[in-house]
Length: 248
Image (tube, rainbow, N blue to C red; front, side, top):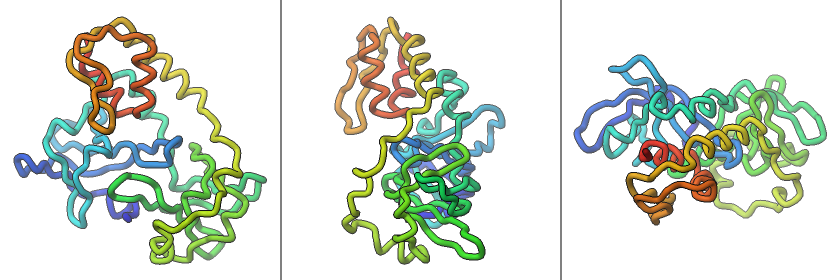
């Protein structure tokens, strides 16, 4: 488990040729998954455009570096304009107010922790008066731009420190998720998905597009329909990016 502060500033190293590709600058959070979807890279050689790495393409996050297989893993968002809007809608966990579902303000988020293997958020550090406590991520209902909404029982399972949070990893969680209302769908995200459908429908795929498990999702030569694009969207933003880069 890593804190965001432990990852920001780390160099990104290509295993293939042993060169540094930049440094981790920040994160893009997927609010529906409660996970880090992309790491934004401060690219040393090119100062224009947003560079990012899909989390699933990271080999490891160590004490001194983030490693990837090769340089092409670092994507240029200028080449994929349909995703600029999504990238700009950053979910900033830090400095967000933390509120219960019933409207009680608990404090302000100052840090978050993630599983370095999956990118899944495991806990949110919250400043409550003069004290700092950690909310377990399975108690978070909604990740918003300015607010994190948590279940009202979250206070009963605050972790006092990172070690206490880590000890909860892999333990049985009470069925809080079943008690809460479904996460609100972001209308702007729906609009973006529709724009993706409009831009990609009717285009021909130049290579096999695989899902997160490596299985062929859309075969080379396919003429895209709305159904194809929706299937890709369900796999996550990085698969949509792969499709967007390989159509004509």
